[in-house]
Length: 200
Ligand code: IMP
Image (cartoon, rainbow, N blue to C red; front, side, top):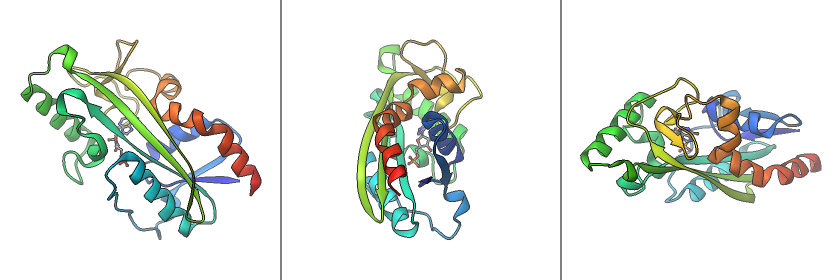
C-alpha cells in the first residue's frame, strides 16, 4: 500500500520516508503534475496541513499525509512561522530566506538568549477528503550566528537543536531524523498509519 505525501518538496518526502522506515511505499506529488499547486490559505500550521491533505485525497485514491512546518524565532515574534517557505518571496532560495532571517534578527539586537527558536511540524492524514488524524511535533533550539553545514534543506544551516553545538545541516541526516519536529510528529502517528495502510 502506498502513502502519498502532499508535497513537491522532495527533501520532506525523503525525511518522512526515512523516519517511517520500511513497510510503506512513500510517494509524493512529483509523480502527479496534474494536481495543481494548493494555496496555503490557512492561519495556522494545522489549517494548512489539513487543507493540503483534504485537497490531495479528493484527487487520489491513496492514503495522503500532508506536512506543514516552519521555523518560529522568539525575537521575531514567532516569524517566519507559517510563512517560512515564502519568507523572502515566492521564488527565493533557501540562502535568501536565511539571509533575510539573519538580517531581521540583527535589527532586533538578538542577544544569545533571544536567538531561541523552534521548528514546528503538523501532519494531517486524510482519505477521500476526510481527515483521519492530525499530530504535531516541535524541536527547540537556537539560531546560529552564521550558516554551517550542507545536509538537509531550508533553515537547517542556521538551526542548532538543544543539546548540540552543530546545526541540523552539520549533523548526520539520521540524527536529524531521530530528533526533529518531523520525527516527533511521525512517531505519534506511526502505528495508526501502518494500521490504516493495512486496511486498504
Ligand atoms: P511548507 O510546510 O511547505 O509551508 O514549507 C515549510 C518551510 O519551512 C520549508 O520550505 C522550509 O523553509 C522550512 N522548514 C520546514 N521544515 C524544515 C526542516 O526540517 N528544516 C529546515 N527548514 C524547514
